[in-house]
Length: 346
Length: 247
Image 1 (cartoon, one colour):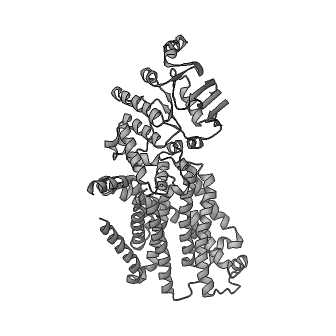
Image 2: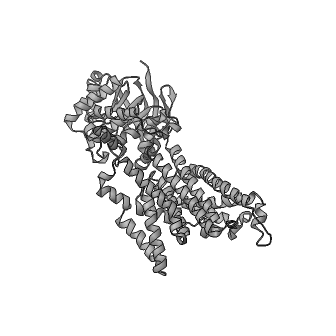
Image 3: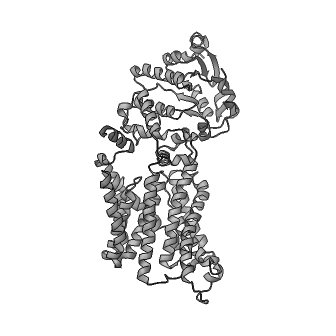
């Protein structure tokens, strides 16, 4: 049983490593798939495991982009001058400056977003259910509007970052692996987190918050911690996206509430809320569906996407994993049952 | 013995309706105290005031000598004052064992300890307490699929898992099959004597409360009508009148 699991993960890691070399023309496409998987997993931390459906997680994505960009620019140059040069100045980054920027920018983006999550959470976690969803959506929309009027970071023009200094194909692989490493780390982190008492406590908050409070669980502390952990990873992928996209602007790319902000929710609903694998499977199905319709049903792609969302919400309420769990409960023993079985076998 | 919960001249009204008026009472450390009264006499309001669900209009509530009338629910629960609900509340989608493990006393954990997995001791404690309430055989069933009576037993076991200093039970025998009630009385008494948990019980079933409690308070129309041993209460003409509606 254990060796079966190990070989499964081994094969998976091998596929992840080989994929961009076997399909070099798809490496950017695969990188985007990783982005979807990561944001879906982070959304599920609060939406699926804790029962707080945030529509504003895109805020951390956009903020991550800006923080990473500002840090990178600030290392060699003056940020305000750089962003308002409009092609007038010549700014060249050395290789060291670029990679230092990538490293510090991505890390800084994650940390900054975690802190933001705690601060915003103090206010928004006073809201429950749909009010929380609308409240967080408001934060994301407001942030987009504010940033697009802030000249120091480029206003509505957005920010242009330096291009990857070596061969561009190498750059594609580089970004693919940045995403892949983040995604795998996130998966390992969540697999561990959901097996701890912390994981159980946030499930309790989802199932009956009032009962959890009455049992003395530190609900607010757990909610803030979960959201801030989730924000860290979104901030990190936001930072990676900033370097991958080279140029981004506030409303359509960074704080894209109607695209990625909604896609991450749909991925999770499709795959199955509150499961470890659901968001991953959902993101893969969703992304493939989206790309296929964009290629072969051009003009109807939004209609097809809308139909997919409606069908998911109406007919597959528990998503793919949720449906499997109901039809094949024996595949999904709880930890306690596994322990009992192991005890009986030995 | 000293009092673990002290309620002094507490009043609470909802708009024009006076639910509690100048209520004073005390729950003895280590004992079993009962609270009775006809429907609408303000028992649950008093309960909710103690555990912090709503602020009181005036008066003071002390737990282990500490003023708690201004504190919110979570903080009071973290002091070790745990309540069960009249309409049972369990985590329906999880099985009994998971319900129990979530009920581990988080107030006794440091923040980083909450990132530990449950240890061998936690599972043993779960099994022991589920055995204690008679749900061991059903431990892998989802809690939502249990009968109402079994859910009450589970909620009771979850409360014990939390190692409270005092446990407030809101009608523990309501909706339970009469044959199960004797077993439940026995378990409540054992929780008190073996685990040393102070019990404060709201109960409608006179036979149950008279069998269990050492001291009983009777509320009527939001005011404290009588207090005393079960015998005193049974022989108190005012209590009998209140229940029969002569008041």
